[in-house]
Image 1 (cartoon, rainbow, N blue to C red):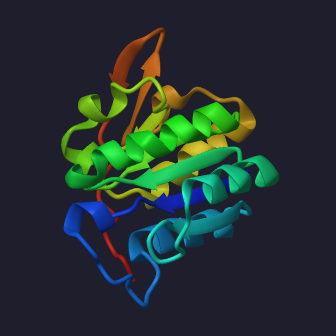
Image 2 (cartoon, rainbow, N blue to C red):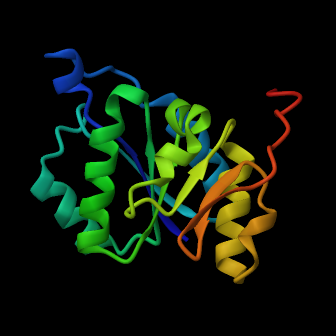
Length: 167
């Protein structure tokens, strides 16, 4: 699968933030797991990469991503939803929210009709399992740590165990 991982803008939330000199580490961890899974991954940090809306639209149109994942903090929830609206308007990609907001408020995170999935808790194994199910056309109801919609209803799958040894 071809996957885009996005860190939404924090600029308006916190006013004039200077972009960090390091990539968003949570997305880098997710990206590394997906690359090890033989998926193609691109990470975009809206602020650090100085991505304007039109640039983002062009990226979507030119790259034909299968999935766009967005990391979501509670203050950036509206920015994340805006990103999924752009994704749905300009591509056929699945949209996935991950991070602390969907972890503590999965049902709320799935309410926008532009959000297909939420990853609850540690995302590395959940996103890999979701991608593999989608590639194989398998039932996503058995992906632990995943929230999704089925016939318009919000479904929260079984919780996923924490990774016992991060080394």
